[in-house]
Image (cartoon, rainbow, N blue to C red; front, side):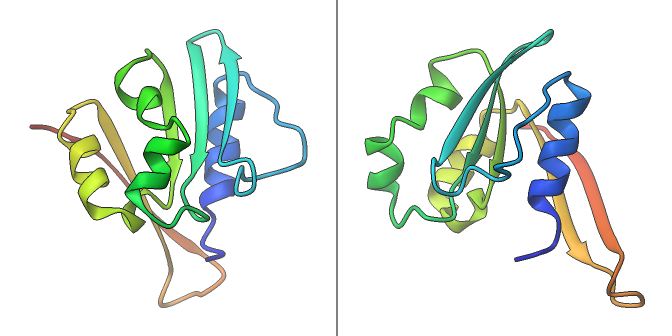
Length: 116
């Protein structure tokens, strides 16, 4: 919490030419869809979901396997089995954010490509 996931996602979306309204993270809507010059983009927040069944019921699977989209996911790691399936798709850039131990007001960002 508070490490900067939504700030990073908003900056990424802005870089894709998408100016978001000030509602921030889609925690309550679960997913927000946008159009960019790069194609469709969806920003998903898994925080409120409680089970993989809810992921299916919310239609989130289509964002990963049925549609050609850039998918920005927050809290995906809360569902290790689903996360594993997503990571195995091989089309992933993983971004890890953490607090800086030396300077708590700073954040560490790791970005890497997942290959399978």
